[in-house]
Structures are given as C-alpha cells and as structure tokens.
Image (cartoon, rainbow, N blue to C red; front, side):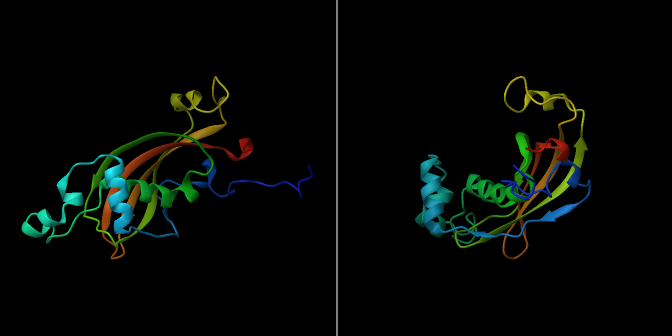
Length: 178
C-alpha cells in the first residue's frame, strides 16, 4: 500500500516521544452525568452505600450528606474522567500498568459535567515491565516503547478538582507504530 493510501487508526501526536515531563494536556471533551446513569451504574456494581441512592436519608440528614444531595458513586467519576483522557494519552498505549494514589477531593452530583487533564510526571525507556506487555508473547522488544506516568485530574464545571489519580502507560515509540 502506498504512503498516500495508508490509513492509521490512531493519532500520530501521542506516541512516547510526544510527551514532555511537566506538560499538562487539557482534554477537550466534557461529560455530564445524568441521574439515570448514576443510579444504573451504582446498582449495576451492587454498591450499597446509602449516600448514593437513598434520597430520603440524604434529606433527613442534610448536615452529613452534602445538603441533602445524593453523591455520584466514585467509580463512575473515575471511569468517565479516564475515558475523557483516553484519546490524547492512551490511543497508542500497549497496556495500562497501573492506577495508583487515587483520591476523590470534592463530591460529584447528578447534573455535574466532568472534564479531564493529564500532567506528565515521568518517563522511562528501561522499565522491565515493558517486556511483559504486548502481543504476541513474549512482549515488546527493547526500544519499541516507553513508560509514561501521568497525574490524571477530573474537574467539574466550576473548575473544582474532584478526582486525582496517577496512571502509568506503556506507549509505543514513533518508529514502532503500526
């Protein structure tokens, strides 16, 4: 196939060499969480915490339940924020090595809109975990990918940080992109 006819399924600006330590990527999309999604996913994962689905309890205890409002289950917040960051950071990733040091810093309520940003914390080309990623076995050969560690932040429509978590991805290098 000629270069003019070649089609790529991923972007060409998010390979290992494209990320710079200290750089913050502001992801362009937002995602509003509806009450229906909140209730569906909270029940789907069998989360039994009353704060997520018992409105009467929240109304009866406004001093301990964010003014009587139900809080969106944190797993939904995490999933949406990670998804919002995926196009710019994960498209050329071979695997996700870790999510770590996660914390919810402010509550999220149905109707809130989430946004994401990722800051590059570190990069490594010689991490031994790289060889265990990819297919077919035995994994990636030396020099084909590197590890990028990000601080992923979720923000609401008021710019308040609602989630912070670090994540490490094995990302292909330009010369080895399919």
